[in-house]
Each structure stands twice: as C-alpha cells, then as structure tokens.
Amino acid sequence: MFNKTSAALVLGLGLMGAQSGAFAAATSGTFNVNVTLTPLCQIVATGSPVTTIGDIALSYTAFQTSAATNSTNFQVRCTTGVSYGMALDSASLTDGLSGLDYTLNLTSSSTFAAATNASMTGLTGAGTTAATYYIHANIPANQAGTTPGVDNKLRTLTITY
Image (cartoon, rainbow, N blue to C red):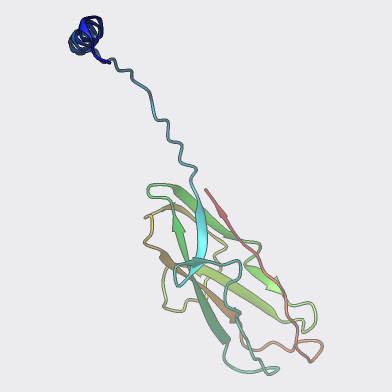
C-alpha cells in the first residue's frame, strides 16, 4: 500500500541518487612497459632457421693437371644493427683418407676464388633480410693422394655476435 511515508522515502532515495552523481570522480595512474630484445643470428634457408649448410662435393683424379673446385652457399639473418662475424673451423686442410690437401674460402662473393679465408668479421645484421655467403673449396692440381675412396669430413661454421 502507498502512503505518505512511503512517498517521502521514495522521494528521499531519489534525491540521494541524484546527489551521488554529483560526487562522481576518476583517478588514473601510470606504469612502464619494459621491452627487452635479445639479439639473434641464424643460418636460414627460404626464411626458416636451419642447422646444416649444403655439402661441397669434390672429385679428384690423382695427378690431374687442374684444380678440383666446388662451392656451396648459405644465408644468415641477424637482428638489425647487430655486429657479427663468422669462422670456419679450418680453411687449409689435408683429407685424412685421401691425403689430398684442400682449402676453403669463406666469402660474400659467388665468384670462385682459390684463396684461403677462414673468417669474416665486421658484418652487420639487416633484420629479416638475409645476407648470402659462399664457401668455395679447392683441391690444387698435381697431387698424388694416398688412399683411394670417399671420405666425408664434417666442417663447422661458427657465427659470433
């Protein structure tokens, strides 16, 4: 049932509600977002990281009068602006089975060169744009060798950044 006391109570509550809107307030705070980037260099093939580089096959006949040569290439991508260097475990070698001397040349040039170069330094990462590098192998001419057969030697390329 509705009476004067109920009406006064409803009216009073309505006025309190109107007054509470007048006292509304807001506050704010600030915070930091700390982002840490860990640099990375990778050997990549078609944009995906890989751990192997294409093999280099060299075929040599004892006492041949010209060098046996071949090459492989690979790509490296590094965080933009990161300085890096690369090194082969060795660039002047003697094959254990065949006894043939050979050299490796680490370079950015696709043009074959019989130089002995085991490392490259002062390189700079370009982000998602990978740089292409080459390893040229050379068995000099006029070697006798010791034991015929096929020998596979695992070589290592290390990228330091």
